[in-house]
Image 1: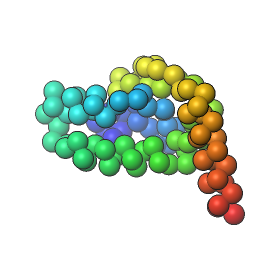
Image 2: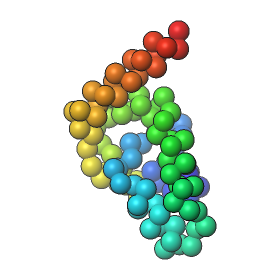
Image 3: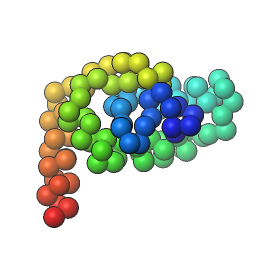
Image 4: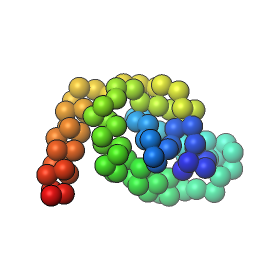
Length: 95
């Protein structure tokens, strides 16, 4: 993902992705003739957003980013609250 969409994907320092980014990725792949199916893109997204670092970033940040790396939306209070609970559970289950 970092190779094709490096402006918004960084495994070491994850950016929060805009809602609906899968459709943007699929359209971009079609535009620039990348051979990825929507299922492959969905699996890559899963690998990115179900990481502990991503959830920690969601707890701390308010801005979501688009494929170009520019701000493109906000994290809602509800999303942040759900994610804080998830991070707490993950930390608790880790010990």
